[in-house]
Image (cartoon, rainbow, N blue to C red):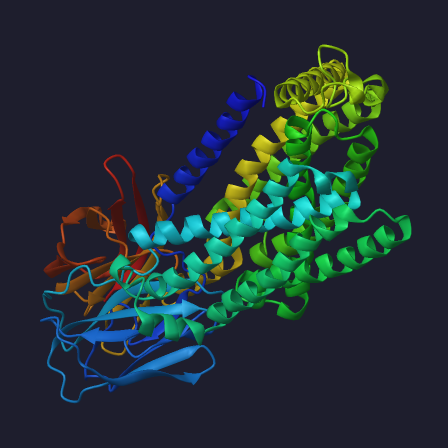
Length: 637
């Protein structure tokens, strides 16, 4: 490696670590890909009689364990009996003890969505009348903390390892077969296999803690590991390990038997066999992701899974081949430079991969977003826009690389190849030749040293000739830039796989705001108003629900619930409410409710002096500087 190459490669490594760290730091504790779309009793409801069960409805099927759903009384003691069970479709219920006392109850849930991600949350309802509760911080920590960060990093490494393994091998077989004998390329592909294998084992160990307790101490819990092996994700990881054993055999043949074949017919047949076997193994590895993540659930899974496999294979062929080309341009020995013809073949392979990515990516975007507004209003859509922008930049740089490739010429090294050791191993300074003093070990060592020196001089001369080609130098720089953008693109893609799809997020938001969306009054006279808000800051969207009982002139009991778009309780620092009767110029009458528990505020004795169409305004503050006021009219009778 020359002096300029090492700093560039170190810069790429630092960029990789920085991007990975930024993404992990910004990740939410649990990326909920299934969302709570309904519950009975509902969030904030004050039931006249105690229910005999609590049911939860999600946007897709989920996996439960014995402790997935808990119901806690005002003192924090569990009141559920038995294990939660699926009652219909995507609705799950848990039985409650009989004779529940009056007060506010907290429901916590911790499940695993069909696309393998943990979903956790909590909400409250009351029996008879609301009360204070000692339950705080009850939302499970599954998917977050140190274990969540390590799991996300393991996913990144697994994707990177697959891309380098599959793409590097494809580059050798399809573009540069001489590269099978280049040590730097061999190390790259083998390194990809090692990274993917280690990351898969790492994910298998972390999986149990990641989806349950979130505690690092449970990583080596064999009971949890046994439970993981019985899940869809556990089966996918085990299948990946088995396929990696086949991939190891493929790599051994590619860099062993294949490089030693001299007969053209035998080598052609072996190339065909390796190509078929390699595609089968690579497709199997890609399927291990498709069968357990986004593609396996939601709309059209029968079509989405093969599309996802093609998408991942195209990414590997492009970015993995690009990594192998970068390695060949910088690390291939002077006597084995990557030929212009090999670069042109890779350029065609990359172009085909881009076409496949555009086609499959368009389908995936429609499937996961569902509307144009999801591009800007959901985190998934925003990440997807970033990915599209990075792909556009990458294609632009690739266009420059194609221009350099078109002008690339193979510098002749015939002079270097024709040069042979002019000093036989037995030649001595005395000129004895083969018949000289051949038995003198000192002369033999000097002759061997002289031969090595001349070989090094020849190699340096060939390298100077190779690097003197300004087109090759330009290609190396453009490919290095492509690799830098590809690292960031891979990090964004990994974040996408851990983010709730935009379609699911918007459906959950609609479900959260649909009940009593314009204000409804129950038979008892209680009034409920739901108002979506957006403070404009980071994590500033949600829904605020105001309940007023009995919604009549005089004293009223008020409850305010703040939820995230996916239905989880939102622990904002401040909530203020005011009432205004504009027709009679009364108000605003301010109310500062007391904080009861996460996402729940309450106030007693809220006085409304006259009947009429009152404007209820709620100010929600989500940070020191971000707040929003939303309002809705309600008839007070």
